[in-house]
Length: 104
Image (cartoon, rainbow, N blue to C red):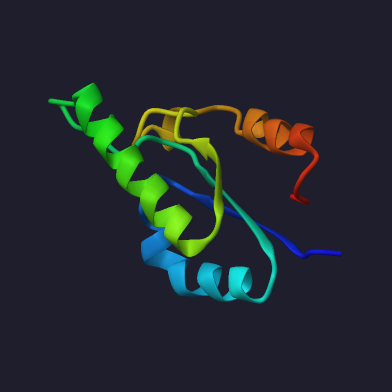
């Protein structure tokens, strides 16, 4: 049975910059690696543009594909830098479990 690994990152590029080599190693060893990003990485900026989020997501998809992993969620959860104002993080946990693909 394939090992299943779930990487949860704040925003696109954190997974690659933070543990890209580890992701690639596990994929090389046959693991199924899924990645979830919780924000789009640009919504905290005053001059946020949808095009910026789209560019960032496109780059992240390319990087994740090069690593051999799968992007499960693409940063639609929370506005960047609002974690202190979010009262309940349980919905993220429930959604991951509902997919039934990875242990949390």
